[in-house]
Structures are given as structure tokens and as C-alpha cells.
Length: 75
Image 1 (cartoon, rainbow, N blue to C red):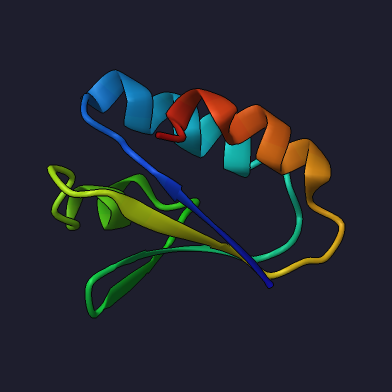
Image 2: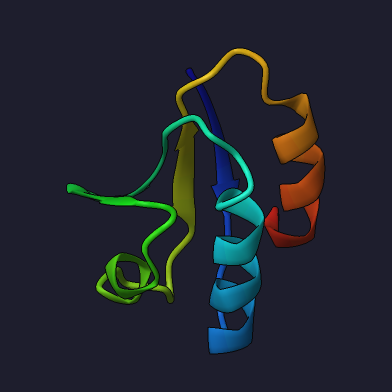
């Protein structure tokens, strides 16, 4: 599992993020404090506190392409 921290400030960023992660078949979760949601769920993401950084937990060792796609959201 790999973890990277991202920031999603606007609804358009959430929509772009979900369209990116849906292309990958492995599990991807978002963790904000004690809450964990499926990264492929737009409603789940909007239930998080988006004013704070969010950890993306990638459940695959072969995720370099995803990490490259997510660079636009990293701090």
C-alpha cells in the first residue's frame, strides 16, 4: 500500500479526481482523520472535510501511473 497526501478544494477538482481514479481497477481509499471513504465515490468524498489535506491510500504496489496522474492534486 502507498499513501500520498492531496488537496481537493473545489467541486471541479473532486470530479476530475474521481474520473482519474475510476480508470484503475485496484482499491483506492481516502482517509481524513478517522473517516475512510472509497476514492471512486463522489458522494463519499463530499462527506469528508475538504478544507484539510486528505490521504490517498492506494492498495497496489503497481501504481506509478496513478501517482503521476494525481500530481496535480498534491501539495
